[in-house]
Amino acid sequence: MTVSLCMIVKNEENVLARCLDSFKELVDEIVIVDTGSTDRTKEIAARYTEKLYDFVWISDFAAARNFAFSKCSGDYIYSADADELIDAENAEKFKALMQVMEPEVEIVQMWYVNRHAYQTTENFEKDLRPKLFKRQRNFVWIDPVHESVRLEPVVFDSEIEIQHWPESQHSARDFGVFQKAVAEGKTLSKKLLHMYAMELLLAGQERDFAAAVPVFEAAIYEAQRSADERMDAYCVLARAARLAKDVNAFFKWALKNISLNPCAEVCCELGQYYYDAGDFEEASVWFINALQETKPILQAAAGERIPLEMLAHCYEKLAGQYPEMAEEFLKMAVEYKGRAKEIEG
Image 1: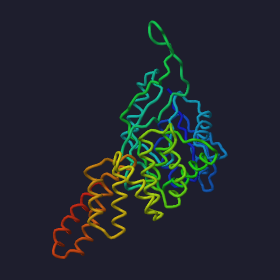
Image 2 (image 1 turned 60 degrees about the vertical axis):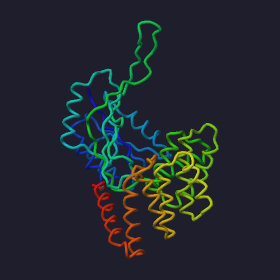
Image 3 (image 1 turned 135 degrees about the vertical axis):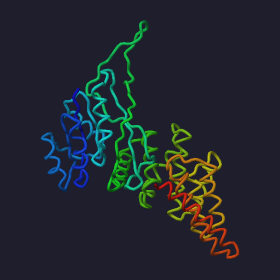
Image 4 (image 1 turned 90 degrees about the vertical axis):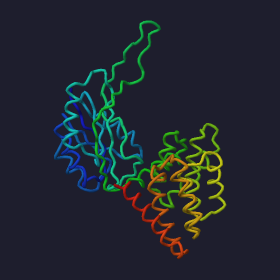
């Protein structure tokens, strides 16, 4: 079975060769679609393949990937990002898989591994993602009676790990795509609304939250939105209001979450609010709630690393306010700081 490596790129001169060097012996062709690079990306790509194409960027990743897939000729297509790579151990697993692949398999999932040392906006250290796709799908009739065409793809979960080592975040680009879709009157799907909220909490700046407020306020009142989507919205709106120093709006959105289904993100927001106000004792209460009493829904770090770090800061501040208890508070600060460093790895 043949494999096409397929990717869309823009200004990836620092990482593209690293990616292609790791995959080039595993695939039969490399297809690269450039969406407007102004650096040496295309020059580097040309060293690895003649199948190098231009695609005018229209703020639509799906359109670019569909174009890239249309240029592939392999039995399977590996969809790569320029900031990923495969190490020697997993390259051998990839080769072994292709030697025994059953023709019925249409999608292979692989473990996408993120590292805190890199500029990733991913929420989890490791999660399964569809990475290898059968280029041409055959429709098959199933069931001996009342037969029907199998519509669900045959998916295989492999043990292959792909390393994700970005050098910078692409959040600004992603926020632009979200905003363009909204400006064009498109309603964000549940998946996209969740991804937008997640990326905002992971990497959004004050201006990004301000631009997102109308989107998430509207989502709260859209009848088709689920309770989970509203919880996502409360998290975003609480952060936006805190950054804008709009106290009434902050407590409006934060308390809606707390009264219905409290999450770690909003507990952290309340903790940060009181920390900024200099009430370190009250701040510590909310960070403890984030750490011990609730779970995150958008940002995994809100349930572990962030409250641990902030509790350390709170107890350092309390040590200065209460000299008679300074030793105890500083001991607690050291403990929480150590736990936070362990998580960072």
